[in-house]
Amino acid sequence: MRIGILGAGTMADALGTQWLAAGHDIMVSGRNPVASAALAEKMTTAAQRPGAPAPGVARAGTWAEAAEYGEVVMVAVLEAGLHDVLRAAGPAMRGKPVIDVTNAVGPGAYDVTRSLAELIADSTGGQVVKAFNLCHVDVWRMTPPVFDGRPLAVPLCGDDERALATARTLVTDLGCTPVHGGGLDRAKLLEATAAFMIGLWITGADAQAVLPPLAGSGTHPTT
Ligand SMILES: NC(=O)c1ccc[n+]([C@@H]2O[C@H](COP(=O)([O-])OP(=O)(O)OC[C@H]3O[C@@H](n4cnc5c(N)ncnc54)[C@H](OP(=O)(O)O)[C@@H]3O)[C@@H](O)[C@H]2O)c1
Picture 1 (cartoon, rainbow, N blue to C red):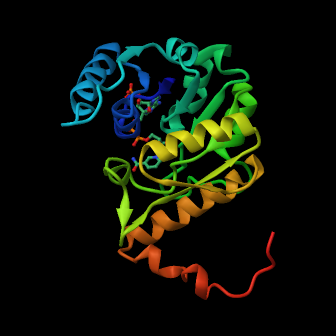
Picture 2 (cartoon, rainbow, N blue to C red):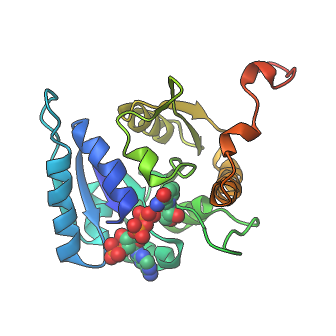
């Protein structure tokens, strides 16, 4: 599929390269067209993997061109630039699947009263799915992300079944397992979880160890 990426930073690079290697075509976008074009070239080289089928095509464009290009659009910009980028991207994301990987990070940056995902949905009219925000970019460069023999599970929060199906495909392309995390109203919980976990990792705590495995998680009503 054609994936438009708002962003030409580390998340655009890591996830975009994985999807290129899986055969998707991508367009990255940033504030500096020369840097974006250089990233597209670098990703093309990185996506060529020995013995694997030919990768897709990577190109660079403006914010609006990437929003227009994508059958699905990933938002991968810093919160500081989010409003400006969405304004510059224009109306092309209306009705499209939109994958939102953004986090509000830094001391005091996280705001429990609203999620970036809902802000993006309101601003673009896109069918937003919150995903990929829980793990550091280095994890998204792993081929595949597997820990202790278990593929990484990626929670998805969104309301639109077509957008969720697209997100599940993109998760599976990484060798990860999609997990239904509920509707877009739960994206604020996913963003809060990221803010909390990042805080633990920064202090050197093993964030994975704070939760028990399913078998030890208590008795729960089945759905
Ligand atoms: N890095 C991680 O480990 C990680 C993990 C999960 C989620 N996230 C989230 O993913 C998003 C992208 O992260 P990243 O690591 O890819 O960031 P990054 O490498 O710093 O790239 C940021 C992107 O945002 C763009 N941008 C637009 N307006 C901006 C402004 N006013 N100030 C700064 N940048 C602006 C940059 O444009 P230019 O290309 O023109 O510089 C760049 O393309 C963030 O919301 C982050 O919280 C990051």
